[in-house]
Length: 106
Image 1 (spheres, rainbow, N blue to C red):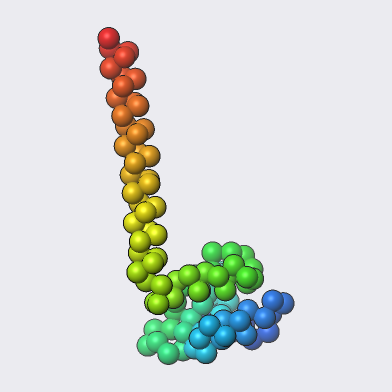
Image 2 (image 1 turned 180 degrees about the vertical axis):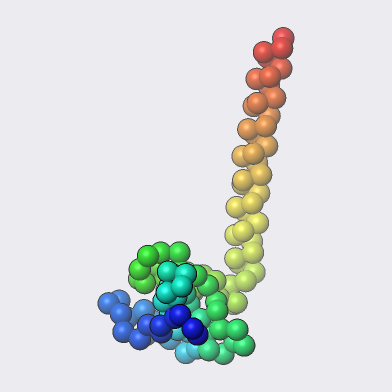
């Protein structure tokens, strides 16, 4: 991986903790994109996810656990619940705006 360095030793032992989840996981710092990433050596294209935090810490380990293939059904349901919630909020906003417009006309 050009422009990346594999993280072997870090303050919170993230490399070790990722390997406890699955031996194939490893973290890198991508200098070109200025971000941490998690990869898996057992995949043809090793990239798994971008760490949305400025540091490697417990949140990274939780994120990797959350996004594992074994949790796909649960994660899909969670996404669907969040989407339904957002749709309901948008629908309610539209209804309120329509009611306000009608009131102004009347």
